[in-house]
Image (cartoon, rainbow, N blue to C red; front, side, top):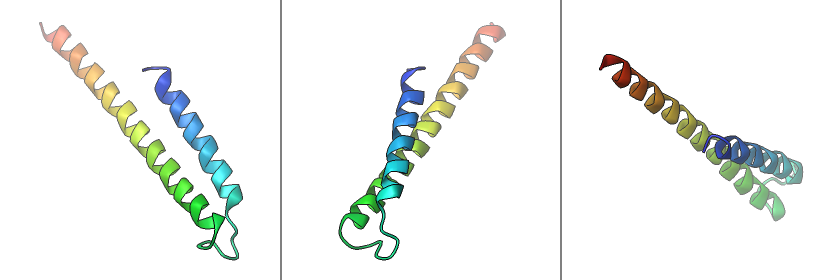
Length: 71
């Protein structure tokens, strides 16, 4: 999991950048631009969720270390 999370964050960031290039800023809610906006939103949500997962795993690891040191 240590390697997978950064890889998924990188892939989501690449998809985010790709979808940003596909948006037609003159008509952002028509045609393929709306699909690109949905892709941008999905990639951003994935990045946020992966960062939350990464932080929660760090917290869980620190709690385990504190329990071990308390014994």
